[in-house]
Length: 87
Image (cartoon, rainbow, N blue to C red; front, side):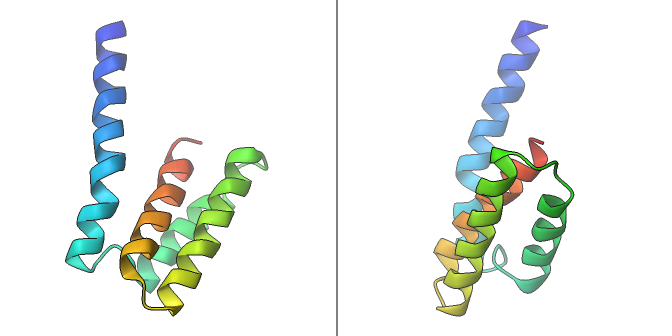
């Protein structure tokens, strides 16, 4: 059981580290649709420190998207999505 949890945590950590970078390189990570989905998932979270941090990441992602910084947008969006999945 512990080995399974450690393996799952390792896979999640690798996915968290790699997915935003890959999405930013492919140009599909930061889109209006992905931003909307992530924002909806964060809104569904209970009010706590994790939700507030995720909301800040969404705000930073929106700002980066408006300034054409798609890599930064993907990174912030990935962080917000990760927080929403960990609720």
